[in-house]
Image (cartoon, rainbow, N blue to C red; front, side):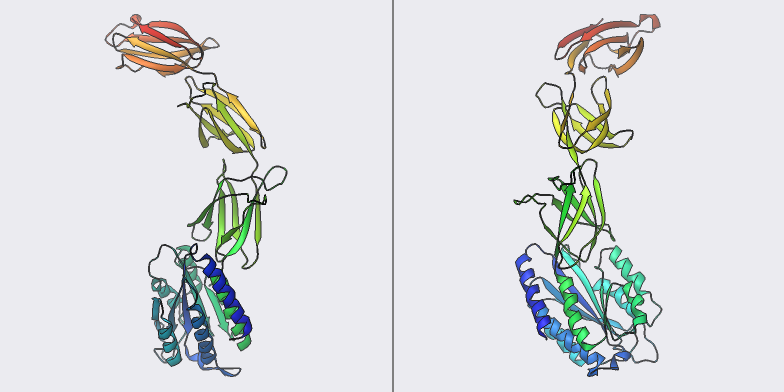
Length: 452
């Protein structure tokens, strides 16, 4: 193994050892081409011998890295061509700890014979990974030829990635014609080894990418473009499968900068910043070994709702973006809440309801909405009634609430103002027996209302 590869593995070991408690287990399935074409000469030796030698050295190095397991699937070694056996693919060494001897032993003895069923091999590879809640499933395909059967490797690979079964595969092409490049780029990340030296270096590059996290920083920008917004959850989704990968509470570190987070660079991420309303960053792609910064506008201000009671309230306010019907939050009275800068419509669930439109939320500013403190009426009656409470606006009766017909005593909180109660005894069969009573409610007051 040359010095470059040795250095890569030293770095890998250091990084993985340092962060092994935080990292999921990494399982690498090598899908190895032992088809007839691998008998061809490639510089100093047969392709199969060069590939065997490098893969054995690689397996030896991986055995020393914590949290990494390997397995081997081989195709094209069981049946001679012709005829063409498109089912000639087999998991020859399953995932387990300390399986180095089994992999090396098989590689030392396998000889190329058959065809190249890449799609079938990828399809079956989905079952090669035992169920695991916290594992990264990686496929590294080593081949010198394109699909020789009727399968569609691109469709199979994409379907497995969308299901979250595997990450985007790595494909190492051994002396392939440059015209075949597009055939493999749709399967995964393709590397073209034109020479033995290229192959030697590229294996190290692939393993480096497969095992290492890389760093990124999410800047939540204020109106003046400063990355000062923080203390909000960020959900990272795998863009392809839609599965949740991470949740992080955004943090400003002790240097006053958004804190660095480590992410798996094999995913493309969609990020939801859970401000109110949420902010989205789509298609985040990371480059291994390079610190990336992603920014989005997330200026926030505070909405304060209060009624001067200084007590926890059971009254809520529905908050909507101005002119829209979708509820984005239900905020309790006597609380503060952050919102993205803009205008909002409030529906405060008092009796009667209070509607406020185009309430402005400004950057780093607290907008205070003072809600009149309710008063309480205790409605007492000696008999069950049908009836309702109304407020009078512009000489029109505006319904506030209904009286419960089967309740003889009821406390009702009402906003300050004048109200009319219209009612009739439940057992009364004559319409003209309808009665009404006018009351005045003041903030913080309690009033007994008897319905005779």
